[in-house]
Image 1 (cartoon, one colour):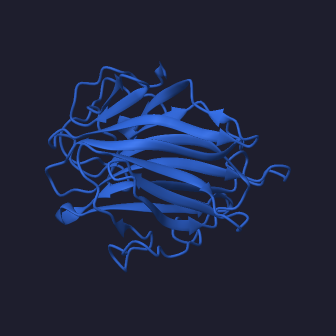
Image 2 (image 1 turned 90 degrees about the vertical axis):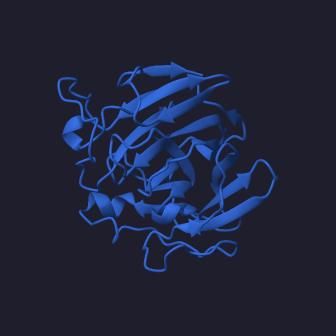
Length: 267
């Protein structure tokens, strides 16, 4: 995305993007090609939304097949995201879903490019008509949940999404995705907000970003790069990122933007 034109800043009303959402991201300093075997982050819903408009806060990855020709001009094999969600009627849940980037590059739409997935054995589907399978999950404001992606045991090319309630220690397997490849790269975290730009401020905190490289060594990012959906793509101009103690970051809606587009923040 390009930098936002500061002469035009949307601060009231609904986002005008094609999907009706305003998104903002933190890109981790991982190379585009796959270098990781697993990755995780702690997500805390710091301040709950008050309106019923949906939100989604997620960790996103791309999968890569090392040693095989790149068929998607650097896009990798599959793309997927896992995180907590908030929907109409104040329902709380989570999702682990994705798409075949080769099909997208060939012109397929998002539904046709959706990845094959197992059904969760531990969670109920929130809406049977939802093709992206959002599950019910009773997350709580102010408490941390570790969301993670790692290889599915015994299934090459499949990746398992899990969420761990740090208060209780309970780990839940969401489901497995056939995202292909054997490694992860191009990692980011983001907020996707379907509420008006002037809806009551809400916020989430991302902390303890980490993973494992293919050789088994620990990976921790050194920087994250800030990205906001620009005005001409329908984004709100009053989203902001705040640096928190101990390598954490807070994403806030309906706030004064202090951290500008493309700022690199050290961990």
